[in-house]
Length: 312
Image 1 (cartoon, one colour):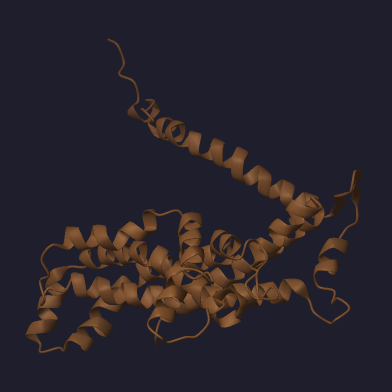
Image 2 (image 1 turned 135 degrees about the horizontal axis):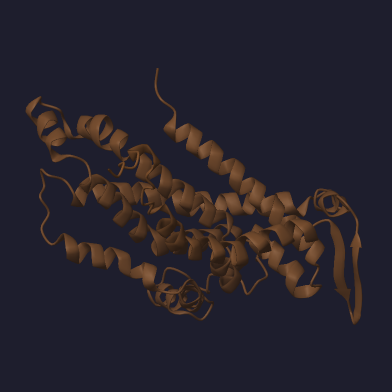
């Protein structure tokens, strides 16, 4: 009589290999086009490698000299990278904070079970439309509108409010204000859609229960909506912060790369681009990139910890 095989020794069918096969293209592409360039950037930051006219200097290993030069004051006592980091922070706060607040307000308004707003799909489309415009084209539009001979100055002159054109691009507050306004208009629609999706994912029974218990609209928002929306809100804040640190196209096009006036609208990535464009200094560019990466990581950690901290 044939003995039956021990069930414990039977080989089961493993489908894990198919999962690894399906996700392999992502990791291959990520490794080739993201991870390897990041490692090479860190590697190049320890070398002296630039062009001086027709002469190529390096690559020569210099250790931490590039980082030391970044934080060494110039003859006027200024540290450029700190100045541009402050510019970037101001421009991000001026654009991202109103963006998140307005997006949160609109998301609560359009998803309110009490108001029951009709035509949500139409409003979603209209709100998201500015996000479809290229930032460079948007910047050129604003440059044309607010130039000395642009429609805004012509309108103000015809209305008798001003006697001569306002030089919007010669004043720090107006240049920064226009950059913040453009970043707000470009991205608040995307943030609104994300927050609306997060609110719509909350169980409606919770809102009905709060309504039955006599909770006001503010109590419902702070006690029900905001705590349950926190994961999506953390995501939007962190992504907005990363986008703000990498801000480049809007101030670059609006000020023609000069960061006028007096480089008060020059961002960190514009500073990085100047090294790549003028002297092709890959060593200093790599050091700036590493500093931006460290700043992004630290700020992301701070934002995540502060928004996800539990109350006692």
